[in-house]
Amino acid sequence: MQAITAIAIFSAGYFFGTQDIAAPKRLTAQDGADALSKDATDRIREAMTALSTAREVLEAEGRYTAVTKGVNCFAISVGGVDARADLEKNRGVDPETFAALYAGMAADDVADQLDKDEQGRLTYNGRVVRLYPISRLNALYKERLKFDGTAEDTGF
Image 1 (cartoon, one colour):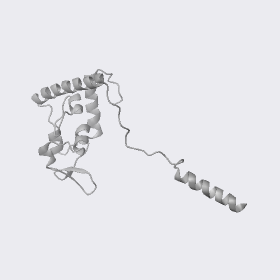
Image 2 (cartoon, rainbow, N blue to C red):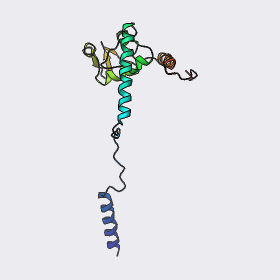
Image 3 (cartoon, helix red, strand yellow):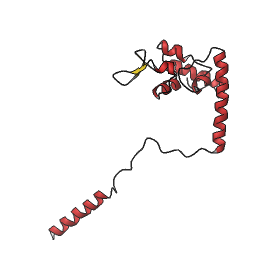
Image 4 (cartoon, rainbow, N blue to C red):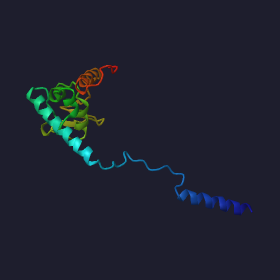
């Protein structure tokens, strides 16, 4: 009788072990996004066109200098940044420039001077590329509030 019980327990354990019943679900970094509606797509295109127009004005006024490909929405939304000077003087860069540089979206003339250090950090001319200091980020986000019409009492 004990042998039958042992075989039954062993068989049940084997069966449930091969079925992955108790195994956790596989996790992925992000589920695939559903396709955007036509209205959402149209609105995003309109916003990007408006941002491109604002970029042209800021460039003409000397308030926007990018080191990445594409439109830097953050830089435009705060009234412009000089990402090239910030990068060359090792002052840190805005969040969107930082992300774009790590994503391989550097402008061609900048990409030639990018590398990684022994810890895997991105470097420009041998110096680690950093995000702006918190004080600068706070000031820029506060500046951004002037353009979006939200209340200025944000705790900055």
